[in-house]
Image (tube, rainbow, N blue to C red):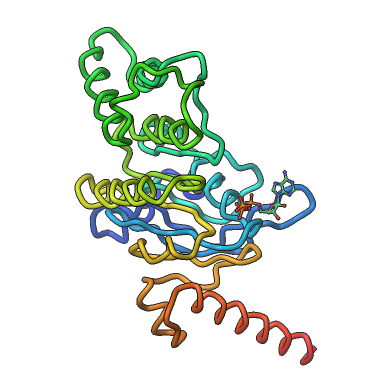
Length: 271
Ligand SMILES: Nc1ncnc2c1ncn2[C@@H]1O[C@H](COP(=O)(O)OP(=O)(O)OP(=O)(O)O)[C@@H](O)[C@H]1O
């Protein structure tokens, strides 16, 4: 994607310090015969948890793939930490966890982490730093008691947490997590949300977390509500509830869906 040329100012800063974690303008993605994302504009701030919510198939994973630079046929402007999405310098600054945990079953938890740490931060001189980072990442996801367990012998939720630990290795400035709490029990879900908030508050990371479970929306600082490749609303849970006169984010979402459908009907009948 061509976002800017050398000679233009550093993108996305507005001239007042650090650029946001993500800034999208007119972001469009085509997959096969379908336009899956249609002209989206949004910002993901640093130091906050932004929830990406919407029904299955609305385009959440596609949006995340575009942000981390693995999606083809992306047009518009998409800046990540002030650089065009997919820029090689972003590789060590973004942590990305897909819905399918990517871990080696025949390695232990620590060996998995050691392997990815060696790719991120190679060389003998970095061995102590790698060891520290691996130990911290394992503790972050509460797997210290399973450090020497084979990944193949872990439960589904534990394997997802190994993937999350890999994403935390480089102390990323932006974490992109695709449905990280699916299949986890309520205690683990609560603990992971506490970790997400700590990463935002203490390390200043921006987190973009997708979910189709509306009660998780209440745990986010900001929400992007999506439907059929478009963003229906962008704001704090409070603002969304107040703006739609709803008691919950779920009711706000349904209100916005009905309003969008009514607006479409009006457009069609006036043609
Ligand atoms: N390779 C592909 N070719 C064509 N269309 C695709 C392809 N992959 C996904 N799509 C379509 O793109 C749309 C968005 O898919 P995406 O996976 O981004 O949705 P999602 O909101 O993440 O869904 P879920 O919550 O179920 O994971 C869907 O309608 C899907 O059918």
